Image (cartoon, rainbow, N blue to C red; front, side):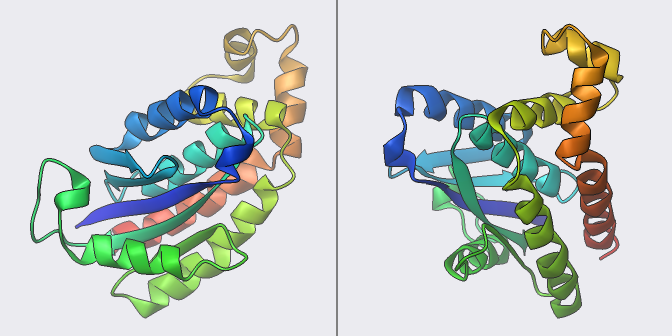
Length: 196
């Protein structure tokens, strides 16, 4: 089984694509096995079940750090036709991802699979996590992004990477961003996905 994220950038026209496009490319490329960015601000990425939720939040943090946001439909399933470009691939993971994306109304994240119980759990937890991200300032989003990327680093090391004078600044920003709670929520959902 694989995971697929279908997404687009919210209000992309209000920002310079020369700034957010490389950031989006880097954020997706960090986790995806393969991905395509098309129609300017839409994307599709194939990921492992293990890292799909972390990738989704990392992409969100990367865009929020630039004062933008992203909508994403996450699907898990199979791939029947595996092409070099994900846009030419076919399978239930892609169908579910597209359906989850199409079902987005006011939420910015949705999850779909062949397992209704799993969908129910993820579609309670993930929108709550996304709601927490709406409180992030660009600085908090940048700190969260660096924390995701350097999971084994302590706060003093994160402060050095972020070029912050004091470790306490990192601690405060991660606390305000509810980083530990978000991590626990993502870990829980990931465990449920991997238990399939």
